[in-house]
Image 1 (tube, rainbow, N blue to C red):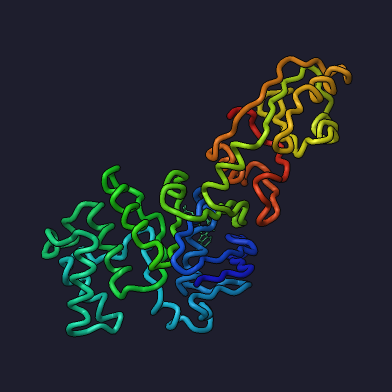
Image 2 (cartoon, protein in one colour):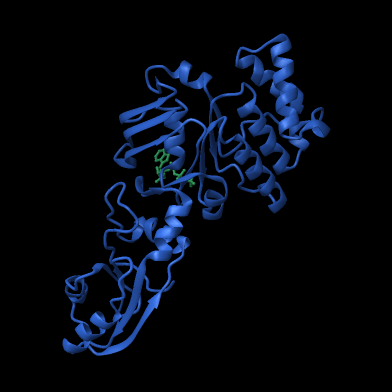
Length: 331
Ligand SMILES: Nc1ncnc2c1ncn2[C@@H]1O[C@H](COP(=O)(O)OP(=O)(O)OP(=O)(O)O)[C@@H](O)[C@H]1O
């Protein structure tokens, strides 16, 4: 339903997104997860035909976002980060206005309005001015306008930001209820949101996709990953490279504490013995060696710490991450 192929967007000399590729199937809810400035909004704006990509193609329901924007927009409901609501309108006035912009009229419009108001539980406030509504209700009005024309594709940019916990749960439940009948991209920087609501997660950092999988697979890989933290008294400058030569070692990351490294090992192999012998036989002074378990959050942080030297190739699987010199060894 959504096909994004190698899109790059440059603002002047700044590359906001770099060869981003992903797809969303019919009825699937995809989380687009990344820290601030990762390139989420830029990607959403290209998909919603707000602006063109510098390179690459984006297609929605078979239509090209750059060449067939009207066809694309007909099939998309978009909730930007700040809901595009007019404070001076009542909820009904505003949704009627949006419906007319979408070419709806008469019975069609009335039915769509009632459905949308019912779905978002806006009945009690439908005649109130939007400017007098709480942040949560305004967000619901924003969602109501996105759903009004019952589009097959929904693009929601940080839909729960600024909501209270009860409202967050309600909005998440609503998004979950859209799965199956709608293809949804949910942009978020909140990891639990991605795992709670979505069937698949794309992690973007520094404008590049650094991981893509189901939340279950991401978690499972981490649970099964073998991670060993080693602290040495006298490691040589090339200790990382040397440790990487031990059979079964996938990657070695330098820790923030001098002398500490995090070693990632092949799944299912306990290399503590090999590593201990290697360090001791080289006379590096073994001070501490322990296995650590990384949570999904840890890996998300590592993958998204682009300012700290991340150099992952796009789509690199989590089980085989590229080394970064800034890795911490704390779980
Ligand atoms: N109009 C613009 N001109 C120049 N640079 C821009 C523009 N819009 C975004 N950027 C830059 O592009 C990068 C990606 O921004 P983008 O807004 O897409 O990130 P984001 O993941 O949506 O972050 P946030 O969650 O903070 O909105 C950032 O470095 C940002 O400063």
